[in-house]
Length: 73
Image (cartoon, rainbow, N blue to C red; front, side):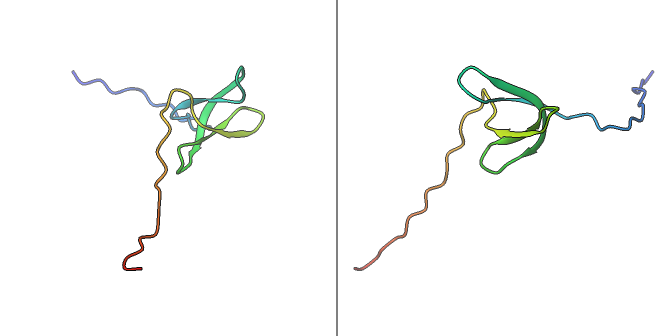
């Protein structure tokens, strides 16, 4: 017998994931992720507004270094 979950339509979409960001050394904020930025930071909804920061427990992504190449000076 195959069982399918009963889906209930809701007015508010369920957040797909949560993240915790550091505000200071001793304070953090947690909430559903609204957007992920290209530099690794995330925007979360705190209930009082959106906050941006780097999620805790994630490694910092290396930034690409671009340098001009001088040939035959």
